[in-house]
Amino acid sequence: MKYTKEERLEVGCKIYHSGLSNLKAAEHFGISEESARRYRILYEESQGLEHRTGKRKKESDDPGVSISPIKKYPEEYSSMSKEELLEELMQSKIREARLKKGYMVKGVGADKEYILLGNKNTK
Image (cartoon, rainbow, N blue to C red; front, side):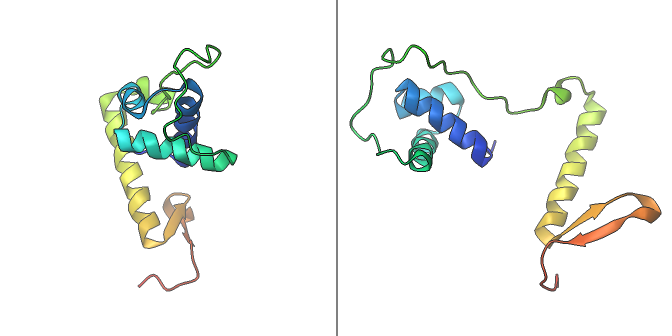
């Protein structure tokens, strides 16, 4: 599962402030140890902080920071049937393929409008 930049920053913030090791953070968030390290560094760089290499805080130093897994899926997916989920997945893959080709589609049927994302030729 890929995280968005905002989700990566949120995970990095939680890792930084909780003082978790990269290994423990990786286990907690279900990501690789290297991803945990990169997310923490991304957060540190976004905040203008120095990298904490070798200067770990103890996990109990900041009891005000709670670490909870971030939501990966919107709440609306949990109430969908299997057919609805498959339809949403198919539409998502179509949108992704169109974006890779450099256009989006707005509207349906005769009102469909193709929007080019760049000024380059799509061929």
